[in-house]
Length: 340
Image (cartoon, rainbow, N blue to C red):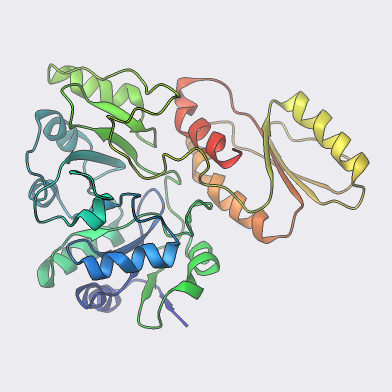
């Protein structure tokens, strides 16, 4: 069985050796847990796709200990990338740039661009620094879950989804719950005007402010129809972050009405509902929890709640739709894909 260990200096050193030997290491970041392998080894990278059941044309994000190491994997380091990296790294931001020849096409899904990130989590930083001392220092790491399913923000979520697909020599570093809970914001810096390709913990307004201070703009949000000129990135499929259990996301009144109708038709069904104000008179069989009313708290708990309920054997999961405000952009993006 794959080892799940609390990180210590000795365990992190062991994890770095595993990466150097072509192994897989699951590690916490501030956003979600990542399934890592040596980004400059095609053989190691191929194991990520096998473990996740991930299509090989779906690119991976490469994690590094600092901005200088990240810039070393770029063919060209654009001014926009430099401005954003200086402002937000280490942190929940992924920058898309033209890749150097050192980065295998297996990492980028055959594209000439690569996503780079410097995570802020202390365990991730310790691992990346230890791996840099004895290996490439570059760790390709998508979220540590089966492809398309709910991301993992706790080690137990990783064990439940991935341990059957990992080798006994691989490691899971249990760094506790992730502090942010939603994936990084992805910004494309390959075009003249940067564009957000995936909203995340780091908000659009904060990114626009930094770019404006550098004399740069931020492109408008992507249209709903796919733009083939834009690089493919992780988490951009219409159906993603999805629990195995059917999921409804509706405004509160519509959600209550629809659940009541469902329970009337299926009296033995077990339903889980997450609403901002609760549901004191919920019908029998409906398990109700109160959702955090702020986007940061909601995002931090969303995946953990979905993973818990998915494993609890409910027949239906129901979430009250958050308010249509800019601060909730990343949450809306994940819910739209999860309930696709």
